[in-house]
Length: 141
Image 1: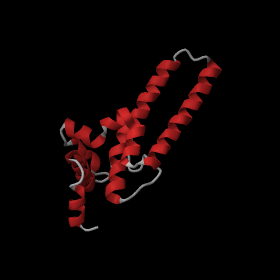
Image 2: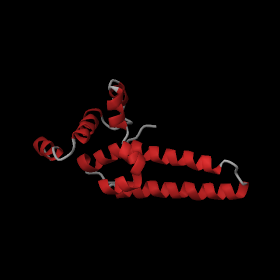
Image 3: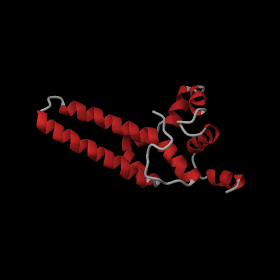
């Protein structure tokens, strides 16, 4: 795909996605050495726009299917199910007093994973043509 094709095809995306894609094009994946310094230079609102997806935070499993990121979504759902099963076994075995609070915290962490991984995963799918199972590819933690 040449540059003209990329520019024409990118016009189909919203301004927000175009800005995210341009940032990833210029500075690479979140785990690349040039990403963090460039990201830190952005205003707070731009940092949030590049680094997190608010829709994915609240509607992660549905939103990733809508974006066509079904492989990554199935992986995250599998992680969620595994954590749920292990935590329920733990709660049953120990009669854990703070099960509801821990479940809430785990839910927030899972939602944060969706929010944090969606933008770069969508970039990989739409711009790079990569559609793998690893939802954490290129991420920095």
